[in-house]
Length: 153
Image (cartoon, rainbow, N blue to C red; front, side):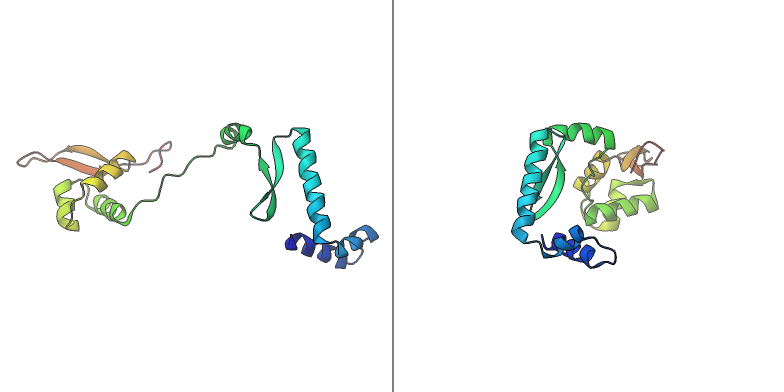
């Protein structure tokens, strides 16, 4: 509310401001709140796809919840995957630098078990099994997945 009153005062102080603008300099906070409430009611009654809402003490235009799927499709909003943990980033860096590499080699470098971390990286499509090593047990090689134009890693 204070920001809005500051805008009114700033506009009233500019050269060439007419009488209407100058009268806004002395507007009371209760009058501004009343006007915003009235505007919110008018938008609600009109049945628009948006409404004026007071959120955490600030007024803003927000989309009606029933229109959210349409706007997401129109704008192409994608949910961002959660950030990678520090162990996942370290493991991914080792794989990127030393690929192809086996899980045992990654564990030897890191000094800890990487089963859960490797599973997370594989689920997100950041690494993939690329073959088998020619040693006893034939462990899988893991390599960083290469990005194509339609895949983000």
